[in-house]
Image (cartoon, rainbow, N blue to C red):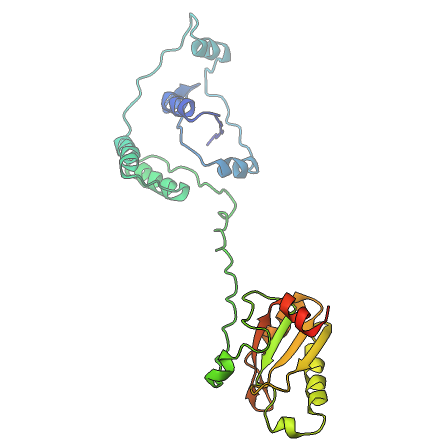
Length: 267
């Protein structure tokens, strides 16, 4: 069959043209007008083009005069009512009233069934020689944040605010690590140096450590650590909080920067 596509910039004009030219006799051929999806035009442009021979007695000049409304205007044959046409009109009206629309593939399948029931040739596929476009992939889902560790420490360890008062609700370069040593550890010689060595050795994996101080007066094993950047402190906090050290679970919290530098005289 000879096919061509026409794209109109305004839908009302396209609807009027489709109504006018459907079943229109042009040079002995009866036109069938259908609404095509936009992407079908690109697919059809890649398909080979077939040119039909003119019918016997075809006169281009007479046809042009007839289409222009000249003195030799061709008689238009009465347009027969095609079986199933009312069903299509009812479908358009039903879609408008119900608020749902068929997609392009469903509409072509419906038109094929109507054409078969009327003894007519089914409409061509929307994707000649090509598979339909793949469905859009579902949106990517962001990975869930890791769950906070479950702490198994005495309540007094959790409630201890240390030397600097309440913890900061947002990341800062300063951390308080609790449950890092016991009263028995403080009885050992050079215990502070040993704790500093252990803590800075692990903490330096996440960034530069500026200051480390185990509080000898703390009964909950408090150690204060200051990093060069908040990013390093945040990475260390994720690694230390809930982790076990010498059989004890570490509790980590951020400390406000200004009280920290004021108390320990560090920068």
